Image 1 (cartoon, one colour):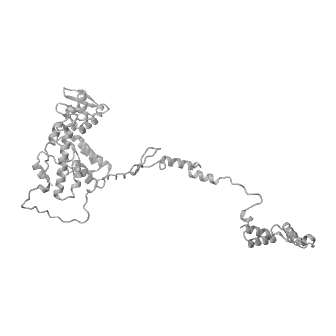
Image 2 (cartoon, one colour):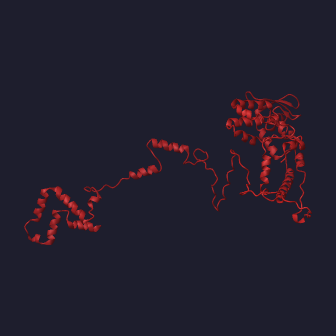
Image 3 (cartoon, helix red, strand yellow):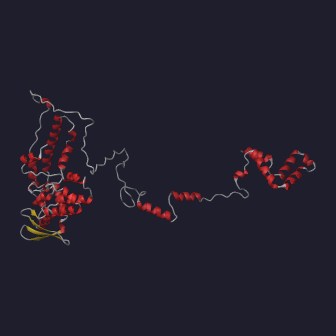
Length: 423
């Protein structure tokens, strides 16, 4: 890794900058909070020193210890307000390094020669594809720069241009207390300093360019033109022969000292505490059926994601209100209807089915004893008289005697036995 001192010697005109995302991760470990985060990023995005000082003063009023944390941090390394105009680069993050590290990830676990060969092949193909893609450009700038200009141009209607000279304009905001900026189209200068930092016309410059009825792409910096783009990728990485055709070397190169580390080598970098991880991709759908795994459900009632109509707060509120009014719906209503079903009334004189069924002869005897004990002497007398009548021709007949017993006493053993036999 090249140190900062060596960079100043090898590249005297290059700037040494810090990644604001990593800078803020170190800052928030001691000074967390959403308010402090917004002020730090606003200070980093400020394109002028005036606005940088305003945001830093607001940070000092909110938390002086947080303001003192930046006391030994050079603002020229993390704020746009102190960046140089020559590089035409206003990037605050090291996304280019992260993209390169992600591209070489499959080659990092290979031996040294295989790793370098894989990186060489990828860079050779990438540079060649960039040269071919540049030939297909239809505008004076690349498609990404064109998209940025179109997005900035959507805000140009919020400003009004006032001519001061042939290429000098006063730009004012249309709203109350709108900002004012001076634009020089000949020198590619705006007082907001965004045009000088990136080389792309800012919203104030586009407002003045439209006043002159010209294209904004004509005023982009030369670094963004196709000729410069081709020159950057003009050096060719030439192909080489395979290892089988290499000439033997008399002095073999000894491998560097290496100590085997414990465990499986890690392929992914360490995530920051507040860094979000990418959601896993949904599984492949089965044949004839589209899987809904990994798809967030949305509610048909309120339109929000994360719940369906059963878990919607509006549905829950309706159920609560209905329960308070004494009404219900769904399963509760069906349960109430089942309870209110009109049942067929039992015949008169029948109190309970269990009381009418005699399950055994022993039970019948107990019931008979209970009836005789509660009926009194009159019943006993009548029964005795019925059995002590003088013998007649009909009484001497066994069938007639059984008929008389049934008529005199309804609860006879024959009836009980017949009911018992039924069970």
